Length: 125
Image 1 (cartoon, helix red, strand yellow):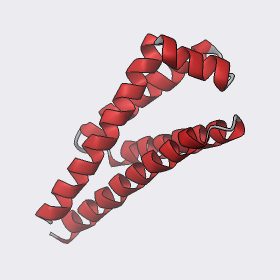
Image 2 (cartoon, rainbow, N blue to C red):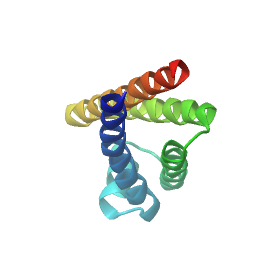
Image 3 (cartoon, rainbow, N blue to C red):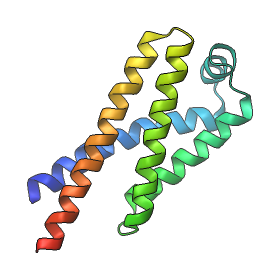
Image 4 (spheres, rainbow, N blue to C red):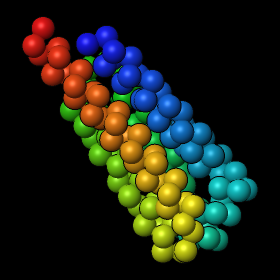
């Protein structure tokens, strides 16, 4: 059980750091993020604020103990974000962005998998 918990937290922290960096860039609307999102992908600038706030809420939910139902929603939101990013990058012909989205999605799914393993281990104890 200890190995599962350590693995969960290592993967989850790595994943959440990535989402935190993304959220900060979106909320601050850094020139690079603004250019990539509005010019390359065609999103309106206000959409970055929506994404940034949603990511911050998801990060907080995953870090706070309990709230298992909300954790499910946070993982769903991160999954949708990754799928939308993949689709958007693919639509504009940016294969590196598409690959990055898949890698992040794998981290999200691994984190969720180990969370479920931990929850099942706690039920048996």
